[in-house]
Image 1: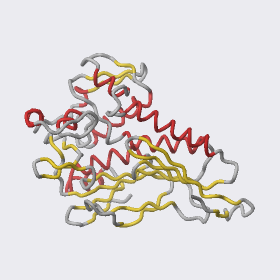
Image 2: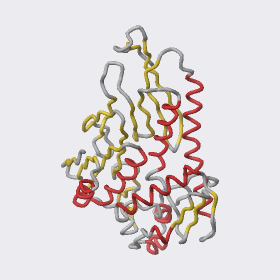
Image 3: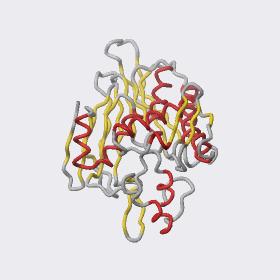
Image 4: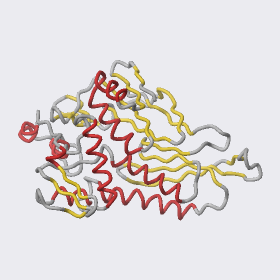
Length: 318
């Protein structure tokens, strides 16, 4: 599917709108861009697919042989050699966890499994849930240690790590890297609603991304975001839910309660320079709630949009 457009700055060059996509990270990745006729779509598609596959192979909890799962299965205290990208994401996750006072916690892997979400999960087991409920998990210095020089990591506590709140965003950043290295100056890339854009369209307008209304079972638009040189990610309690005991539970874990999040926020959308940061902060602010979330976003100068469960909207744009 494509259409042609003329670059006003270079009227002799006809640019064609091109759309590439592929499977990855439990969803699909996409790339939209305008270019002349000299783009090798097959090669670019392979490079984009390869970037997403590498992130998934390193950070997935669904692949038993992923680098993250190797770290999870290693004995507590044992150093494990990990790829540089995984080390980078783990370090970013710990820092955002620190800045959010534990609202973003990658040590919730046991909770995710106990409540029936994530790779290898089963229907929730009452005894397993009771053992985890109410346990605050955020203790970065006592949970994980990183050795950047040696590209190693080791768990310091028997807790499973889960990067589902940040890995997809990093995958989008890797798509962006491939587009830039391929010489593209204007593009929109994304994975399952996490998006990053660069440059403008040939007509001088920015890329646009629809902001969905956070209503379960519906597909309505709340508004439209304009993107250029920025990334956007949304976390919410209205998708990826599961019914347990007659209650609909969110897949987002509350690390303070040791249980699925019960929030007065329906969704949080964050704009940032990287999609990795937007992805993680959207989760962290959702966990902080309708009162503490906006306050934290203002203190850290984060651009965020908060949609309460009663439909009220609050923005902290910077």
